[in-house]
Length: 407
Image 1 (spheres, rainbow, N blue to C red):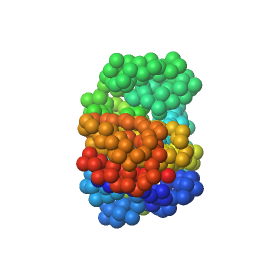
Image 2 (tube, rainbow, N blue to C red):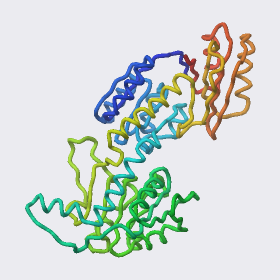
Image 3 (cartoon, rainbow, N blue to C red):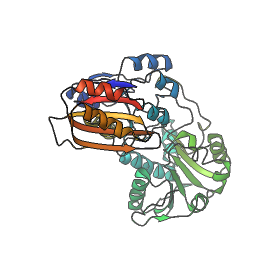
Image 4 (tube, rainbow, N blue to C red):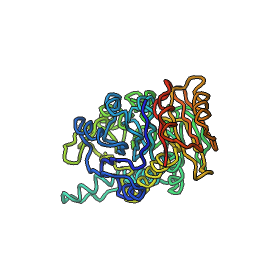
C-alpha cells in the first residue's frame, strides 16, 4: 500500500523517444531523463529505482519480476502501438496504468506496406541491388502491375483499415479477415476465414497483435494455402510468422516474395548484428522494424503518450490505458483537493473511503469510480482541511494498492 503527494515526477524516456515528449513533460515541471538506448536488464533495474515514470518503445521489456522490484512506478508509456513488451497483468496488480499510441504511426505503416506491395510486384529490391552491383536487368519477367490484383488484409484495425483505403486508390481489390466483425471501408470485403483470404489473395498483409492466438499464425500449412506466386508482408509482430517456413516457401518458388519488418528476435541496438534465414533470398525485402519510424510518426507518438502522462499525473485520467479501468473526472471545482485511489476490487471499498471523508468533515464535490476484474480506481474532489491526513487514512485501508494526491 503506497501513498504519494508528489507533484513533480522523475520521468525516464528510453530508446530515443522523440524530444517533443520531453519538452511537453518539462513544461509541466517534471524532471525528465532521455536516453537513446534500450538498457540491459541490470541497468534497467537500477534506472527504475531512480524514476517514478518510464517511457519505452519496442525493445525494452518490463517483466513481472522487474516491476515487482519497482512498485513505486506511477505509470508506464509505450511510445508505439504494441504493449507486449510490458507485463500488463503485473502492472495492473501494482496499480500502474500503461498507455500506448494506437493511432499516431498508422499512416506511416500503411504507406510502407503499399510501397512494399509495389516493390514486390515489380521486384524493385532485386533490380536495385543488381544495378548497384553493375548488372543491367532490363526485363519484364515476373514484373506486374498491382492494379486489378487482390490484397488480403489480416487484421482490420487502425492500420489494416488504413492500408485498405490506400490500396483501393492504387486499383487493388481488398479482402480482409478479422476475428471481430468490422465495418468495411470503401469497396473492401470481409471474408469468413483466414484460409479463404489466403486462397484468394495475390498479396497478404498482416496487421495483428502478439497474442496466444496469433503466434505462429502463418506457419507452413497456412503458407501452402496462399496462391502460387503470391507474396506475404508482415509489419505487425515477429512472432506471427514462422520464418523458416516462409524461407522454404520462397526457396521452393511457391511464393514470389516477401517483405518482413518484424522478427521473432531482434537486435537490442543498431550496433548489434542481425541474422535471418530470409537473407539472400530473391525478391525478399527485409527492414529493421521501421514501419512507424518516420519523423512525423515519432513526433506524433511523443505528443500522444506525453499527453496521456500529463492527463494521468495531473487529473487521474486513465482513458486510453490498456490495462486499467477507464476513468475521467472533469475538474469542476479548481479549489478542491483531488485524491486518487487504486484498490482491490472487493465490495465496500467506496463506502470505506467515503466514511473517512465524512469523519474528517470533508465535503465531496465530485467522484468517479471504474473497475475491472482485479482492481478499482476512484478519483474524488473534496473540500478538506487536512489533505495529508486524508491521504494517510485512505492509504492505510487494507484494500488500497496506491493512493495519490493530485495537483
